Image (cartoon, rainbow, N blue to C red):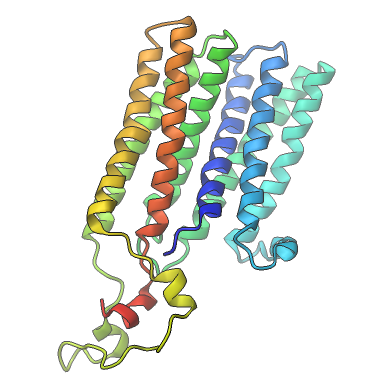
Length: 311
């Protein structure tokens, strides 16, 4: 599939924002984040900025962005619609928790933050299912795709929260530990995912698609079209195997394993050094996630392309 920069940015930015919102609610309820309000509002503000920027970027991929609101009406059957509904509904408790912090109503703030955390997790899952539900694309219709979206969202959110807390002079050991755990988990999950799709059998071949397999090997006599069409432009993208493996290593090592190691090192030190390690871990993690998400689209192969490539 042809990678769209707006969708790559959307899934990474909104995933990080929702991950940040999730940990804010969870750790805030556990009393692990300063209750003076300034740090909480900073974290909440950054989470909402990332989510909003991601959602706005996703509209750039639409032909008629002004009609995007209509997608919200199909929530009974469409994961895209469910994602939109969940995203909109999550804003209300998130903003409400911030207003409660400003008013000093910390009990209500914690409750609303927990509701927002649940909404954030639901939204990320709905985003993952937009792709996992597409059966003609074997790289997406995979059981590890939803798990990957959720785990990587929690990793980036934890790394961001740990960085903000360390920069504010707070004890960031808990979110740093979460970044370590989910970074390592994400690395293992992506390695298993790539190993699985590399060895998976194709969903269909020219023989099975045409029903001519009983005769023998099938090949097209002429190309289906005399010029490029929508399917060829959007679904005919192919990344070279050697480049794909190099980008996988960058995403796996530089974007997940190394940030997890830096988060682990931050647990052994304190002060500005810990903040610097976490800041570097977050920067590498987000850059690595952009590469990982680009690969998710670039390596996807739609079944329809067998009529154009013959494989």
